[in-house]
Amino acid sequence: MPQPSPQISAWLAEYNAKLKALQADGFVMTPTTTRDGLARLTSSMSSDNVQVDRVIDSVIDGEPPIAVRVYHPQADTALPVLMYCHGGGHMAGSIDVYDPICRKLALSSRHIVIAPEYRLAPEHPYPAALQDAQSVLRNYRDMLEKMDVKFDNRLCIGGDSGGGAMCASLAHMLRHDRDIRIERQVLVYPSLDYTMHLPSVTSNGRGYFLHADRMQWLFDHYFQHGEDRQSVSPLYMELDGYLPRSLIITAEFCPLRDEGIAYVERLQQAGISVQHLHFDDMIHAFLNLEAIAVDACQRLYDAVGEFLNRAPAR
Image 1 (cartoon, one colour):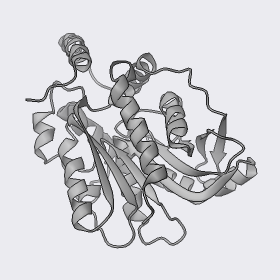
Image 2 (image 1 turned 90 degrees about the horizontal axis):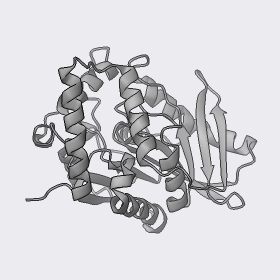
Image 3 (image 1 turned 30 degrees about the vertical axis):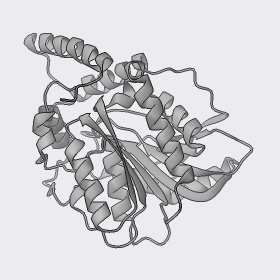
Image 4 (image 1 turned 180 degrees about the vertical axis):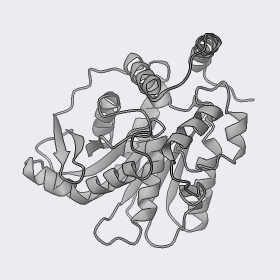
């Protein structure tokens, strides 16, 4: 039987014990505690001394304006663009929290990474975040030109967890749009089924960091207008039109594992180019746990770089 890596297992034992004690003392999740928790976790587990040639904070013009952080690993070279949407269950995460991750992505992918500060639930429920990300895709070229940033016309998107869900949703939403051509997408343990019906939600939904009841709570804050959760789940969206070449990354002990695998199978059956990378000893959010998942994180960054640069175009 597969097991989480020894480092992950030891960390989970400590994490679950602390969580049990907090719950016994009456701890209640709130948006603030959720955001603070992800920020502290990522900061304590991620190296923050990664140097990128050029890092710029800017704004995408629109209603509302969207703050972005741009990472250019080779400022004197025109490189393709990767818009990366951070994880956090549509409620947590930010460009500051994900700064160490985006730096590594820029270096490993040799892409200009654009990280949007998209709006979060519950203050801004569905579809505000998707509208923000789509605005970035429509307007990033003008922003980069004004900043005198060298880039070429190749566009990719990527994200983890809720950010992966956003990217998959955007790819479907834009599949008939002639103005935005997404060449490739990278989905890291993405949330693709808001109905939470697949088996791994139950089998991995307790004890492996991301709990099923927490997922339900996050989704209830994200969808506040009676949305049909199946119709807004990328796993069930139509596969007609153009969809980008995809790399989908899953983890064995993640409650989202089965929906990622099911999405790979759907894309394959539809004749859409897809690669699948599975980590058989990892949990959800291991990218935020770099200190105890060093090899897995490096393998992920290497795979993303290889996929974005070496895979043949469709």
